[in-house]
Length: 355
Ligand code: NDP
Ligand code: GDR
Image (cartoon, rainbow, N blue to C red; front, side, top):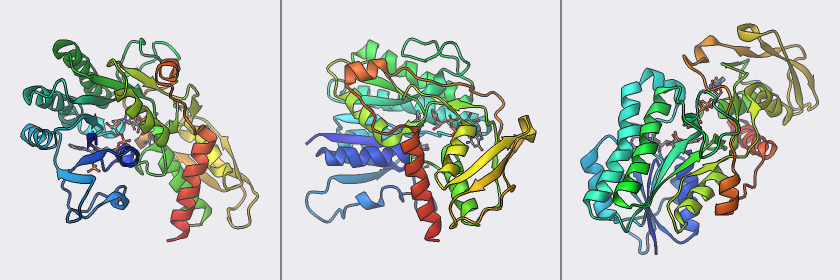
């Protein structure tokens, strides 16, 4: 049985990846942080009692800012594959916590690579680094592919740029199987609540159920290439199953404005909204409601712009070119944007209906 170690196992991708690897027969070890409140809601269903025989899901306390802890866990586990998904992953928050972000998202990756090297595991352990479309930042060309130059626009992206290159460097210097998946935005019902898609699907659900008045958002013109996290963790696994270590872009090739995502989320509930005004004065107004379950007044302002959600430097347009991953990996996503919005809206309506 292959052994995998996942950093960031309590996050969106960590949870889906753990599920996928368990379904493929792996023994999965995950690193979780100690926190004052339990932070394992996304993986509780995978938990196994360590007193039983044949346990295949094992958790370790750890933190990417702590080298000795990382070395000890890797030494204990002797993994065949490491998926480094742990990160301070919020772009806006990285402007508030730039040094911590560099420590975890940048140097954290070095700690993993160096631990594998020091422990003499360079020919045994394959390493996946969670790289990001945020590396492209200020638009240089579209669509963005493996050869598009980087221009990071946040402390998060700059830290991830270090992680990208140190992964390439260890691959070239020490002949390691260390690779980057450059993943474009991917979402799901497990997405963190402060990322824009989940903020929208939660907000729209609560507005429709009369639990919230309005949704305050930032830049409605930003364009993102959104896919489903379930499809994207499959790509992570495929990247590590190749004969040669290479970096891959994972994307849908379709880009959509934040404003359109809002419209699609309301439309899932048969609520039609129009946008009026411009910039910080733009508002979203209810025009029609085709479902008597949702008592939304016509003409009601349900979306407003709040400048506090703007970023000091923004990434305006992301659209990925998945040609290499489709041809070389044979990766084929199941969800398109409409199916993603439906999945997220159904989950959030169910969540708030049960409250
Ligand atoms: P999440 O924010 O949902 O999960 C991040 C995970 O990292 C959580 O398990 C979190 O633990 C953990 N973590 C945070 N800080 C530390 C630390 N100091 N030491 C160890 N673990 C830590 O992110 P996603 O699942 O969405 O993303 C997974 C990875 O992929 C991240 O590296 C992200 O930057 C990257 N990425 C994500 C994309 C996306 O669209 N989702 C696109 C491209 C890249 P806790 O639960 O305790 O907070
Ligand atoms: P992003 O995701 O920054 O692309 O990083 P996020 O969902 O936070 O923002 C996407 C775009 O929406 C705009 N936006 C808002 N964003 C948030 N969070 N809240 C708002 O209210 C809001 N209003 C508008 C943003 O300005 C931005 O343009 C995500 C993370 O998962 C990273 O870890 C990952 O690397 C990238 O995706 C690819």
